[in-house]
Structure formats: C-alpha cells, structure tokens
Image (cartoon, rainbow, N blue to C red):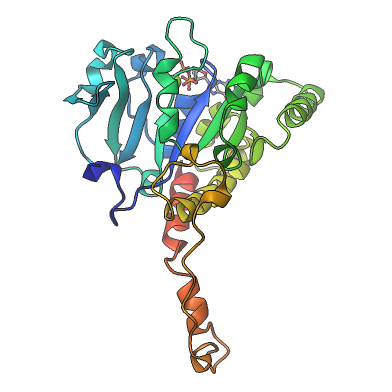
Amino acid sequence: MSVGETSSGGRRKPRIALMGEFSAGKSTLSNLLMGQRPLPEKVTATRLSPVWISYGTRAPYRVATDGSKEPVSIEDLESIPVEETRSIRLFLEADILEVCDLIDFPGISDPNMSSSVWERMLPEVDAVIWCTHATQAWRQSEAAVWEDMPQAVRENSILLITRFDKLNNEKDRGRVIKRVTRETQGQFGAIFPVSLLQAIQAGENYDLWDASGAGPFTAHLIDVIEQLTALTARTELPLYNVDSQTDIPQPVATPVLPRRVQRAPDGGRSARERVQSEPSTEDTVSSVDRILRSS
Ligand SMILES: Nc1nc2c(ncn2[C@@H]2O[C@H](COP(=O)(O)OP(=O)(O)OP(=O)(O)O)[C@@H](O)[C@H]2O)c(=O)[nH]1
Ligand SMILES: [Mg+2]
C-alpha cells in the first residue's frame, strides 16, 4: 500500500463510499463535506469511474483495472477510459480527509456504464452514505443493490434522503420519511432527510444549516467516523469483506493495573481510565466538527 493510502500512523483510514442513483447528490455531498470542489464544474456532468479522495498533496492518478497507475490531469478527466479504470485517486487537504477517505461512486443504474465499474470498488469500502432522491426515494434498483451489501457495512451506513427541498409540503415530507424508514427497516444505521442545496447556501448561518438537515446528519456522521476508526484499527480488511462486526477482533484488553493506580486520589480520571481512552478521538471529532461548521 502506498503512503497516500494510509494515515500518518500507517493505519488506514475508514473509507466511506457515496453511493446512489444518477444525480442523487453524491458529488454535491462530497463537496459539502470537504468544503471545496475538487473537480471542475463541467466534470460533474461527465461519467467518471469511482473517485477515491484522500488527504494529501499528491498529484492525481488513475488506477487501471490491471492495477497499473498513471498520472491524470484534473482538467482532462473526461479522457479517462471509464471501463478500464478502477479508480481515480485525488488528494486534497480537507479537514474531513484527515479522519476518513471518501469514495464518490458513479450512479448505480446508468445505462451507459456497466455496473462492474462501481461493483469492483465495493470490496474496498467500510461504510456508505447512500443518497436517494426525495421525489423518487428508495427505488427497486436501489433496494436490490443494498440487499447484497454485507451487514457490517449496512449497520455503519447512513441513508440520506436528498433534494428534500423538492418536496413542498409537510404531508409529502412526512409520508416519504415514513415509507423509506419502513422499507429500509434495519438496513441502515440511520436515515436523514437533507437539502444539500440549502446546506451549501446556509454558509455560516447555523440555523439554516440545521434546518437544511445537514446539522443532524453531520453530527451523526462524526459518531460513525469515530466508530469506524475504532473498527478499522482492529482489521486491515475493509468491512465489506467481514461477515459481521463480531468477526472483528475485540480491542486488546487493557492490562490489569495495580489497584493503587486505578483511582486517582483527587477523584480525577484514574490511570486505567486514561489508558482505556487512548488513542484519543478528541482531535478527530474537533477537526471534523470544525470543517462541518465552516462548510
Ligand atoms: N434542489 C436540490 N438540488 C440538489 C440537491 N442536491 C444536489 N442537487 C443538484 O442535483 C444535481 C446533481 O447533483 P450531483 O451531486 O452531481 O449528483 P450525483 O449523485 O453526483 O450525480 P452522478 O454522479 O451524475 O450520478 C446538481 O445540479 C446539484 O446541484 C438538493 O438537495 N436539492
Ligand atoms: Mg457525481
């Protein structure tokens, strides 16, 4: 594995795939989470292989289906042969990428692209943020793909009902949430309605940010990343390849400490508590939180 694919400690970061139907908002979501737009505007209308985005400053490259790597130009992504490209690797210094990798998938039922273009990337992922259009939420095609997803991925995944601003009355909004919740029962860790458009327009206005649905969603996402970080620290295998979380080795037991160091005399945190809480996830949370607030 190359340096760019691992975190600074050599451990890989959780990989979160952004999946869903054509135009559901996957790329808009990745821009929102990163607080920047890495690809030129015109590219968003172009069919691309999965775009795997990691923290760093390395130059972009493509990984071909035979595993070979080749530099690519951001300005000329359209020229990349989709069927022969396993992934496009991009590196950016966005705060969220300090704690996870994002993989922006193409739409799942594009008639002009074979599904193998994205299916072959699935074994690399730990979790998914699935974007479903509010106006045609949770189609049969989406349910069919999700049915084959391993449970370990599903339980760490989030279903986003995107373009929620397109539903213009309370009754419709309630109805969609209710139906989607019923039809996906037990298949996602959480479901959130969101208007990515309103989230982007919210800027620094926290009330608008919360009202767009992005507030509650991103607060939950921070928890998910934290949980994934703990899981992926214990297995090199992406969660797609494990049958369930119970197959992942348990955390290494904290050595039994002599009784005298277990409780600090001043009633503060004991040595044992400190040991158990390491490595600290506080930095992780604050850095994601910062970007999410400044998005
Ligand atoms: N009104 C509204 N428009 C949105 C929302 N989210 C995304 N869009 C718009 O929908 C269009 C498609 O969004 P993308 O983010 O490119 O969708 P995608 O899922 O990446 O699409 P493909 O990669 O082509 O499958 C863009 O014009 C977005 O601005 C939303 O919540 N509300
Ligand atoms: Mg896209």
